[in-house]
Length: 56
Image (cartoon, rainbow, N blue to C red; front, side):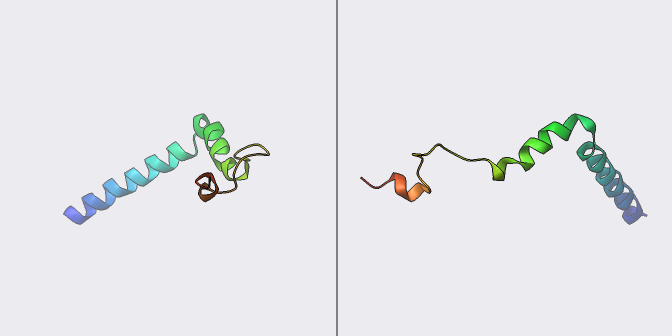
């Protein structure tokens, strides 16, 4: 009996997360987050990694 209730609650939680993820309100925010790895971090003089910043 309890396992059926837990299963139903988890199914409802999954469906709620799926509806939230596919809602049109979040589309722009998720599209922006998806393009973050493709964006440049800095300009021409920016260091390539954090270890170059520490060198004198």
